[in-house]
Image (cartoon, rainbow, N blue to C red; front, side, top):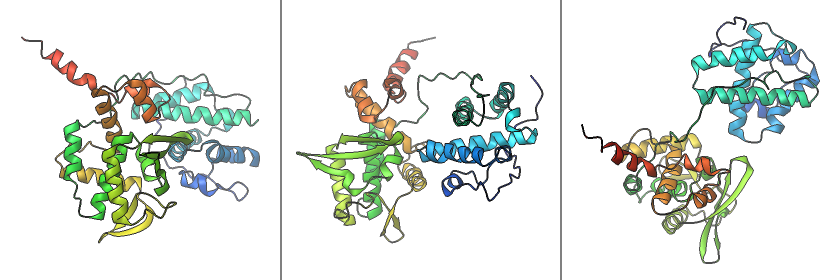
Length: 339
């Protein structure tokens, strides 16, 4: 394998942008402010196909941004080697992946390789390249049977919810928002994009409509405790009649409600602040509540199959990553080692 300079996470190479192939706003938002020169040198058709990969082919915003960062870093690296698009071979991609492994965790390396491979696939199907130089390159092996997401016990979750004040708009909103993630296993991205109409009555029960990643529209019955918190929040905020408006809204200082949805980054900061106030680990994050809800459900006799349905997972293996019911059993068994 030929020797290549190190990847360099901070490499910033100037990439020429022409008027003929200017990235649309969607690509700029994804972090790709300009097209790689090796793409531009292949003409407008190649540039258009490259742009379409991010804007038309990838619908999820988070995936688009992650893939754009990975592809940008790869082309910065190839341009440092003065490689054109046709010069990129399987051995080139393999060398890049091997060097990535020195600086990144295995899951990140696999994500970068997936982005590169899918981009080249798209260029091949568009007639830009005859073959995919990344198709035969294997990423690092990474097998996970237990997720890394920090999980709270049922007592800790109640401690957190009980520590949030219930006499302010912010407190009522935060209690309801965290409740959605705990009781419906919702991702934070699905929770913050909910509209008022996504909390609705069906028969005698309230339901939640969640728009999860991958364009999944997912409906789940509302837990009675969550229903109470949502009703109190909506009544205090006076938003019940604004069916198309965001369910969880940003609040300015002085309990001034805005018409804008709360941002995911603001939710994370809120959770860190609330966790600190409840004397819980700083590692507590947005995804903690999804994992906490699944674990609590399984500990109380719920089935993995139904947990998968509530969480809208494609595979029960994914749901199993959130299950921490075996942790206590394992600890008890280890304590049997009496020396």
